[in-house]
Length: 413
Ligand code: PMP
Image (cartoon, rainbow, N blue to C red):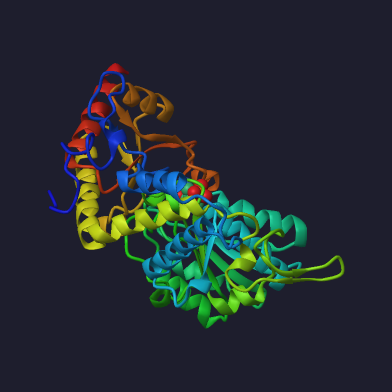
């Protein structure tokens, strides 16, 4: 399928995504299928950041001088772009962080401090990324909270009836991923949130893997917190977002202390800044926020209708073609509508590391290992998988190259 607004294979090297024009081990074009780890950056993101360093750079929020005001305007305009992208009610609900990991740690730490004491419970799922497990374990070590885990089916779907049974009077928060970075499962987050709210419990959604692939409307979802990373959605590294409903952000304490997050400071008593600055101690990465806004504009200009149609086609095509390979096992939902652009697989008893290394020599970049989801690996009874994950610039030719590559690797064994 070729969608007019999507970049073409031929245009990749010279055009929008220069890195995709690289020759690796004499192979061209690069078949980059590690997008769930990080996406490549369109030219407009890199150029906007370079332009800001060359022509605008000054610290934000502090200076009366021209450049500082210009940098501040850009930074705050980026916050508005994020607000629009998530359809949050107000920019006061958009906190810039370093990424999903920091956003989740912020909630675990600050919500935990305000609302959780020994014996209180957080509900997670068996398919969480380490960042949504270990953050809560740090709180557990500090305050003695308990982790309750929603189990999954063999097809990688959450057992929703078991989820509902986990609630009790000690349940204080639910923290669950929107899309699994291993299985590609698209979780029924609206139902997850509705059920939690019926029990009066707020919900944090880990949107690291959903934001690049589907439109997000935090008001429609009704989530209380939503976290995502810039680098997974064509933006720069080092920046991400925590969306939080104002009523929650108002009620939880700051995360870190320092400049920006205060109103007044004395040795006796410090008062904190208004939202969202209360959570933004220190000099923010105001250049990365510009890059993130450019990335979100880039995605919006293509539109999620086109992106989803293209990526669904790629996922369905890849699942079908991969099954041509003898001894192929694909993890996660069989139903393509429940399976996002991430496919984990294992071929016979070829070790995933060998498969990944040999595919690399053929100019095909995939991920191998536990994908920061060791408890999920344990549930699946494996040590790791090979993972191919798609972005809007991937094509059916990339899938063909992957399948042919796997067949060649198989012949070598
Ligand atoms: N959650 C999920 C589902 C992820 O896939 C990732 C990144 N692999 C993270 C959280 C952490 O994101 P980051 O490293 O950008 O903070």
